[in-house]
Length: 457
Ligand SMILES: Nc1ncnc2c1ncn2[C@@H]1O[C@H](COP(=O)(O)OP(=O)(O)OP(=O)(O)O)[C@@H](O)[C@H]1O
Ligand SMILES: [Mg+2]
Image 1: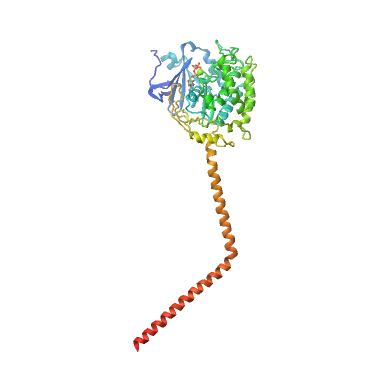
Image 2: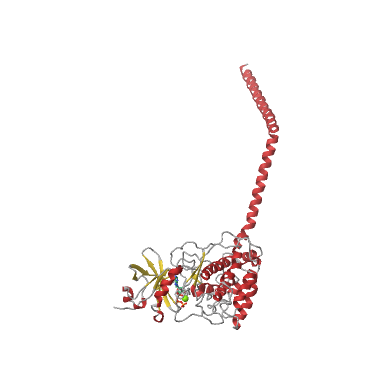
């Protein structure tokens, strides 16, 4: 008997001859962990091996056999960096579970990606909860562009780079793309309704993104945002539709572009130039390639080059952190305002303790990267301010150790040179003392003898 799929947390569901359990929402355990989006509802499931999965249940309008082709095409990219969500299975209409719950026809089961969506990050920086350290923002931006560049090289495009479709992790630094059903790939049939991108990331031409150049503009905007959020004064202006909200023709887009220009130039004049070319390009094809966009960011991640803004007093060293293997969350500031300001007055050498990118699949703990979720603050080490704070203490410690060493060496040399003199002088003193004692003893014996003889007489 067909039924509505409206599970409660803890309910089992059988897919591909395995049992999965619907997970509770991290902030409301009596509700299922479910994300409602434009075309689908996404549930978090757990299997017997404690692995987390996402089950994407498409809305009726989008539940089409074409999803089978999309599923098959995704095999081509399932080993690409940043495309772990491509590794999936599809629930065919013949599946017993689809027969029981018809809304699960063509549903996709894929790995659950831990982290937080760029949408969440925008929201949390806007609320002033925390901001990414600039060096972390640069690493994140490089990782994002690296993934986009690999797609570009393969002649492919995601076609809807936007805050809900980009998942980020800060510890380690990682980026994963979601919502992959309509990826452009050479030789693949176009979807019936072609995308033109999401608000705030859509090129002014309004052309379809179903083409190899489809991601150029949106990727440039999102990469710029990654750098922009490191400057709190700008980050507080972020919206659910990103930072710019409009393109170079819209009044708000124009004003916001003007606002961020000096900052981007400070971070990297070269990146600012390439971004500007994307911003003003007349078409997607006219936007610079993603590899061009990445080049200056790659240089910044190189240890020998530092962005000049690290000494900008406008930068507040707050931290945006999330432990990947725990519920997604924003970090809280780890240093006081005065420490942060002090930190900005000095340059920082490239710190090798930066969180590194994930090379291997991450832990499978549940995460709370929900648009509705309330976050639990987590912390990751501050890069920059902590190192600066520790610097004077290290100097004092080194100086004291040096003084002790010099003193020890001096005493050693001195004692070697004068050892014989000391010992002869000591012998003289001891001898004198011995003589005196012996004299006293002799005197005492004489006295006792005299007393005895007196008594005898
Ligand atoms: N594999 C996954 N792991 C973790 N969360 C996921 C996963 N897939 C989707 N989500 C969550 O569900 C949300 C919606 O997913 P997705 O973007 O695929 O749905 P959609 O309906 O196609 O979106 P859109 O509104 O862009 O059309 C994402 O923003 C993300 O929060
Ligand atoms: Mg989406």
